[in-house]
Length: 330
Ligand code: PBG
Picture (cartoon, helix red, strand yellow):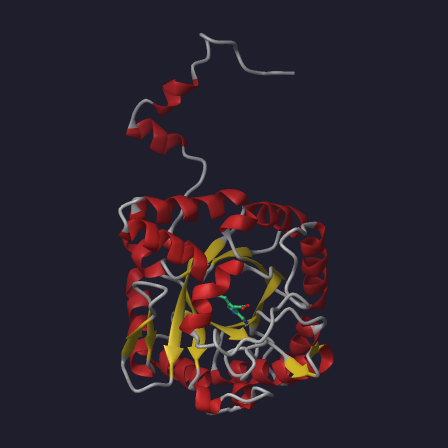
């Protein structure tokens, strides 16, 4: 049954005739509180190094990352997500540097938490920044070994929690890693550490610029299709989320964002848990490149995409635009 009066009694444009009425009737709002700022850090000498494929994004040294944490606090951004670019001389087949207690991310977490303890810090758990083959897990005879990888990821997660990370975010897509990490955190006395699982993570072309940002582009042999999901699948995302929730995930991530709004909607409806979208490097680069050419309006495109994630049901968005967006939002 159609409950609406027919035209001309109902004229939907009445509600769109002026800015004040559009603001009053807007169904979705993006706020600074919805932002997680994706930040690249490096162990190089320069304070800041531009990432060519991501104009406006720079790899930061630890001092600059501390400055960014203070900026986040001042801008009202609740949390930062850290991604490391590791010197290629420190990469090896096993990703040994991932479990160096004095490694880049652990040191950055300590310094940032000391300077701006009010800002939540989220860290990626995966081996790809540290392996010379660029895969997220342990590679043997051309295969990614699941359980051997999980054992390494557990060590990485505990080490980062002990360094002071607030949110552990496994982005590796190995089976059983959330349960193993949760149990290890509990054992280590880290029962308050949050887990935001990259539960529905797709094997996507939109990670391209990120691989330049963290220096794994040249390294990567083959693709990640034996662990990351097929973009054709939707029911499978619910299965992945259900397992991670049962294993102890506090929050869920859908990644990439814009091409997967239907997945965000289904995940939010199915689990009613805090659900985040990751506006990944390729999404960032497309907006920046088109805007640089004068083909789209950058600020409008940023706000429109962030609004789309919220409208689809996301509670928040991990985005390289966070700092720029915060200036446009309340
Ligand atoms: C890998 C990881 C990736 C991203 C975050 N963690 C890339 C990949 O899975 O290949 C992508 C982030 C982005 O594109 O912005 N553990």
